[in-house]
Structures are given as structure tokens and as C-alpha cells.
Image 1: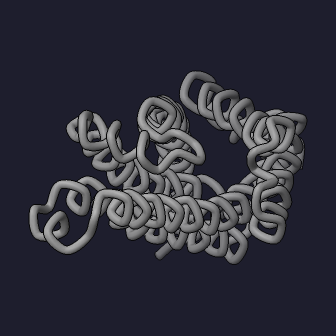
Image 2: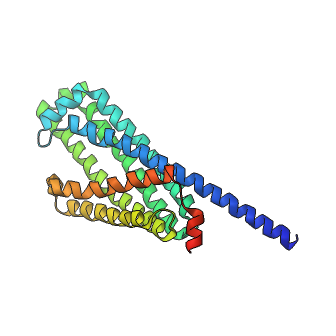
Image 3: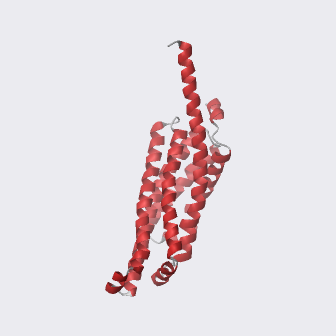
Length: 251
């Protein structure tokens, strides 16, 4: 093989890699926006419509009366967390050239998060079945069934918190790699590092100090920074793409 042929082959490989990165950036952006929209319905609207804090009886009644809505929300969650893996792989393809080890670590954290979250939906899916099973009604009184269902909802909440920690760790590393790569504005990537650090810190604090999540300031502080980061990043990657050529020129 001549030197010219080898050089031509290397250039072709580089162009193919850049093409993959550009496609991966668009896929990651699209998934971010879709998952945020779907998550608002399944993880905010549905629970807020059916679950009544500190009232197991009202919660059980709402779930039994709106089983379809409840099950749609849980089923959508499964698809959302499966989509999380697609997004993580897309970000890995985009960022592996920056630091393959860190890109793989972030992908594994996000994959573990998705697996935990999918398994966690079992607790939620068990609630309507538990409340409507005739065999349970013959063995447990209404109050016991409501308390048991409420306990399963609590298990789901705990598992969701574990998933959030892994989500924040994975996204925090991805954000650092975006900052280092300059594929997106560095201010946006830096905000991502901050927002994910806040998410992990507050979620861990809530695990150590139960009940803290009931404070509106804590809830806003945990979710608002990451919400704006993911919406802005998703929009940038989908509509503007990754600044691969500009980033290469700056390095």
C-alpha cells in the first residue's frame, strides 16, 4: 500500500467517524427532548393526578378508578428508560474520541440507571393488581390493602431516587466531556456539570434526611437546573448539531 493510499484511507475513516458523531448528536438531542416531554406526562402529570400525599385511602381509590391512566403512565416509563439507553449510546458515540474511558463510564452509569428504573416499575405495576385482586380482598381488609399499596408506592419512590443518582453521575461526566470537547457552548456544558452535581447532592441528602423532599425549595433546586439543561442541550444538539469542525480548530 502506498503512503498516498494509506493517507486517503485514514481520511476516509476520519470522515466516517465525523459523520457518525453528527448523526449521534442529532439522535441524542431528539431523544432528550422526547424523553423530557414523555417524562413530564408519566412522572409528573400521572402521579400528581392520582397519588395523594399522606392519604393511602384516597390514593388507592384514585388508582382503582383510573387504572388505565396509571398503567399507561407506567408503560410509558418503561419506554422512556429504554430510550435512555439509546441516548446514552448516542452520547458515547459523540464523545468517545474525547476520552473513551470516561465516555464508557458515563454510558455504563446511564445504562445502570435505566435498568434500575425499568425494574422499579414492577413496584408500580403491582399496585393496581394488588388493590383489585379478589383473593387479596378475602385475606386483607381495605385498610391493610391500602397500606400495602402505599408501601409499594414508597418502594418505587426509593428506587427512583437511586436511579436519579446514577443519572446525575452519568450525565455529569457527559457534561464534562461536552465542556472539554467544545462541541456545544462551554457555558451550557458547565451548567450541565453544575445541574447534575446538584441533582446527585440533593437526591443523596433526601435519602439521608427523609421528608426533605416535601420542601418546595428542595424540589425546585433538585429538578429545575437539570430540566433547563436537558431542554437546552436537546434543542442545541437536534437543531444546531455538534460543532465538530469548530472544536477541532480551537484545540
